[in-house]
Image 1 (spheres, rainbow, N blue to C red):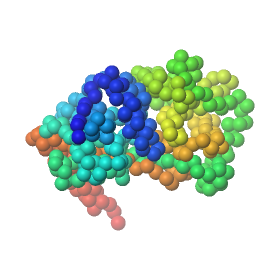
Image 2: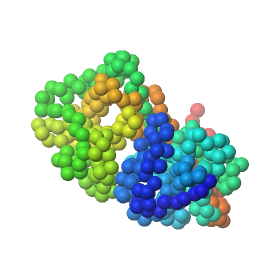
Image 3: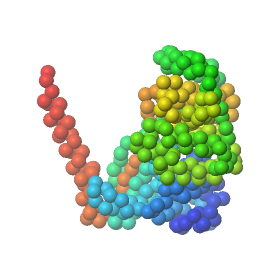
Image 4: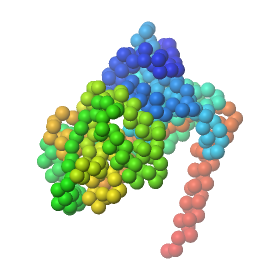
Length: 372
């Protein structure tokens, strides 16, 4: 086995055919691991990072990949070097890919090369599958360098399988959801100024792109600086995604307009017949009409009726309103692997031994003081 490290976009372009072939060997193909997604992500968020996309070759054949980046960050107020998967809040999930045809011994050898950290680093494997082989490997304390490893919860993402007719699916939804939606739809339809359309986005210069930014700038996300207008990186990521996926006609926006004025949108990327609604915003001024809920209902209904897709991966956490749509979830977690320097040993002890102990003590103390 030979480890090669890709340290720049030009070099990453050279391994594109093999990279995408290995990713496509999974079913379904994981969107955030594709070359196109990672290029768009890197161009938007690479500030203060260095690329370390690890590739393992066996006799010239790519058998393992890990899109890692390295940065200097603060951990509990202590500056550390962080080696982490190329993922953030914009990423539905992340992972490491290893050729499924390898023997268990070969697989462990590849994973060891892809996940190794130096004595002065913390490795963060962010948003990986709760039941994944990667998690099992990292938590195996018998592996060299795995003596200081910890797990933290991440998203619990609702997933809707599109494997029946819309009528069958919707009939099985809770009565409370259908009653709430009927009220919202009636209120929405009483105003004949609203329209809902799906538009494929193939070029960053399309007028609809400015409409998406306008809607986002009037959404609640402006209060946290995460709207497409004020957040340069988020806007750059959107434009990069259009560059990466636009020509393949896999990127579209469902958009609500009111007498021509953009009101709400839901942005979709399709990968291997799985639909990822990677962003959704609405104008707060139209909140009374529930444009986000109406738009999600309309888009989901259309996806079922088109009969071309296998799944709607919500890209969200376990929000109460999504639990009415499905009881099928993709559970994610984050694993931290600490190097063996004295500083990192102390940080690991504080994070996974001392702090949990203090939290349990505080919880017991509070519980014991509650009145009968």
